[in-house]
Amino acid sequence: MLETSARLLRLLSLLQSRRSWAGPELAERLGVNARTVRRDVDRLRELGYPVEATPGLGGGYSLGAGAQMPPLLLDDDEALSVVLGLQGAAGGAVHGMEESALRALTKLQNILPSRLRRRVADLKGAFIAVPFVGPRVDPERLSAIASACREQEEIAFAYGDRLGRRSERLVEPYGLVHLVRRWYLVAFDPSREDFRTFRVDRIDGAV
Image 1 (cartoon, rainbow, N blue to C red):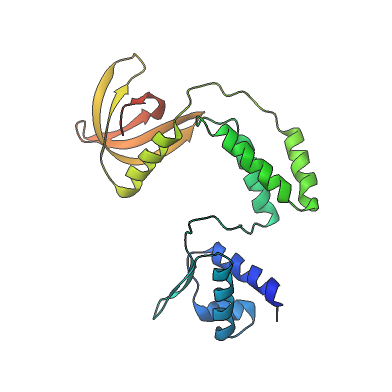
Image 2 (tube, rainbow, N blue to C red):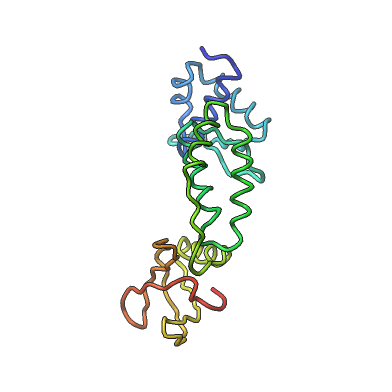
């Protein structure tokens, strides 16, 4: 049987790995009984982790979204993936995100175990920073478009094509694509009865 502190970390890792766990599943994974699982869940809640419990058939435990972000548990490969992603985001195509990415990267590097710091240093040493060339996109605009995609809401905007001609559009957003240093909105345009692709940096006005 795992010691309490190690078991809590294991429980947290399991809860972060998928949307929901049945109590008996967690008990089996941790090698304890259902009562101990409930007690460990209460301990995680006391530490600030928003563990939600759904009773009945099909219910279980899940890690909800909290007001503050508790620490994440990452394995070595996951941590390195985050480092590489942040390194790329620091010079990416989203306006104003460079400093945020660098701050997050610094925080992560400061807490990495020694076995990973050397690997990260090697990766950073081999990483060639290429200055971003191209239009930058407002993160608020990306967020608004992403929300409309999720909620399946129509969006209206003014759009300028490559010749500088402007037109008013009302579309049904489908998704966002990042390709060759540019963000694109894929949407269905009812007025043209077909799907269209719009460069996000050419979208003007409220979304």
